[in-house]
Length: 204
Image (cartoon, rainbow, N blue to C red):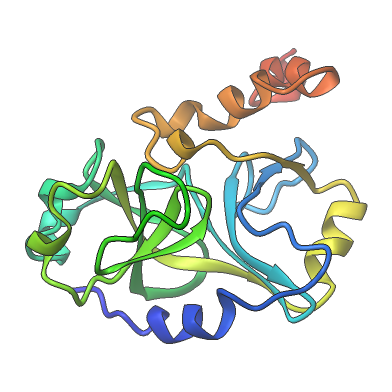
């Protein structure tokens, strides 16, 4: 059973303000990023300010089915209905993201807290039936990715990440193994060409 201490972590992070903030945007690993935790990763930033950054990797499915670790939530989870590895930090804790259609200010479901646009955090301690029928898509993550103050900005400046806009469907892509290429492909200019970059450049 995955624990849920990440709620406290996110309470400390989400909602803090700073400028400029990239909360709600995607970090897409560039081909030069070879760290096995983040190679070809697509990371959704849940919070970014002068205190650092926090996000989850959207394209790292594990073999663990949600039904085996979180009672009652599997039916609300999109396919594949497995736990995703959100990052190398706190792998024994879980957090969940879900998309709720509608504009901000039109009321939010109990047990869901907006992060950016239609994307929000799900309270996994709430009864799943409370959110049944409210969520457009949901995904469960074990662990998260974190950066200390200034660390992410330095990595972007060094060319480790592309910073691009997120679409709600990225959170629950049914083909996460293709997400890196599909996010790049929809960009304009040179980034779209990188979608064809070979997994092993020496084989090109």
